[in-house]
Structures are given as structure tokens and as C-alpha cells.
Length: 216
Image 1: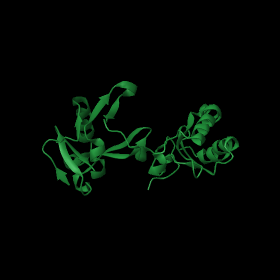
Image 2 (image 1 turned 90 degrees about the vertical axis):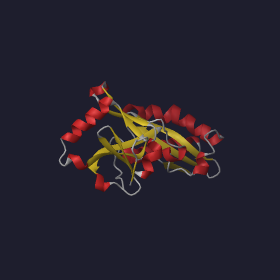
Image 3 (image 1 turned 30 degrees about the vertical axis):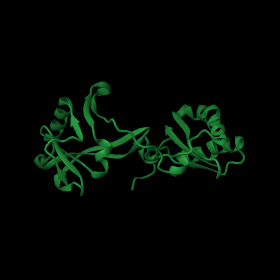
Image 4 (image 1 turned 30 degrees about the horizontal axis):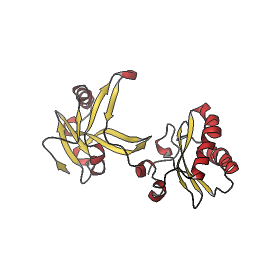
């Protein structure tokens, strides 16, 4: 684990630092604990995060350590560049809480890990993609909006005729999402596009509101 005198990866506002130190003081063995901050995946078009206290001895190999005032921070190696330039703030809205303001955004491949990069690069402007988007907007999304769900086409393999669909809102992490996809979305897409070979769900259901896919 590498340590730097001035931590340039992430900073804390005075309010956020005070909140962290107050929470830290309530922990047993607090003098050996650090604030661990890591990117755990994506949520929407941004990153998802995990912030927790853990013993400095638990820092993974290659993690970067630094200090912001009296707070020791540890960031795993895989999260360093994704968090560089970020700021941890305390927001008073909604009852108050820590908010990570990050100038970095995920790449298309990170947002849609289930889609081959070469397919993502083709965009969704082809004839099949255009028709699929029309079906989703006019037929599918109005019907699943009642429980806050939404389905979006993120990629289309025009040659293999494979549609890559991402669910969000109430459909992300919902235990009924498989049925929604196979019996609802896929059925409507195939009716409008008979030549469609496959409809693949590339949603990260583990990060949904009610995740039913367990994280590894």
C-alpha cells in the first residue's frame, strides 16, 4: 500500500470531515481505523460507491493511503483513477448525509459490461435499433411505468439481430424482472421485429433497489 503526504485523490469538506470523525470516534479501536472509499460498480450513468471504516491492516495490496486533516483514507488501486479529483461533502437535503462529488464518469463499457465493446461502438442508429427504440417508448415503457420501471436499448447487433436491453427504476433488481423481460418486453419487440433473434438483459440487478442477484 502506498502512502502520500498530501492526498490528491479525494478531499473532504469541513462538514464531511466532522461527520466522519464523529462516526469514527464511536467505533472501537478507532485509532487503527481508516475510511475506505471504493467504486463498486455503476449506477445509471455514474459510479456506485462503498464507504466504510476498516483496520488499516486490511488495506488491499496496491491501495493508496492518504490523510485529509485527521481522517486517514484508503482507496483500493482499482478505484484510484475513478475517484481522482473527487470531493466528499455533507448535504443537508433529505435529512442530511455524505455525498461523493466525482468529476469522473464511467466509460460506456463500464456502464454496459454485458455488451461487447465492438457492438457498443456501433451505436443505436441502425434500422433495427431505431425500430426497437420506438417500440420501447410507445408500448413497453408506458406499461411498466406504473411501478416506476423503464427499459432502454443500449446496443443492437444489426447483423446477429440481438437487442441488448437495460432495465432501470422499479425493474432494476426486481424479482419479477425476468418475467417482465421474457413475457412482456421481448414479446412486444418480437411482434414488431419478427427477425429479432435474441433480447438480452444487461442490467446490473445486484445494484437495484431490491436486488435478487447476489454479488460475488
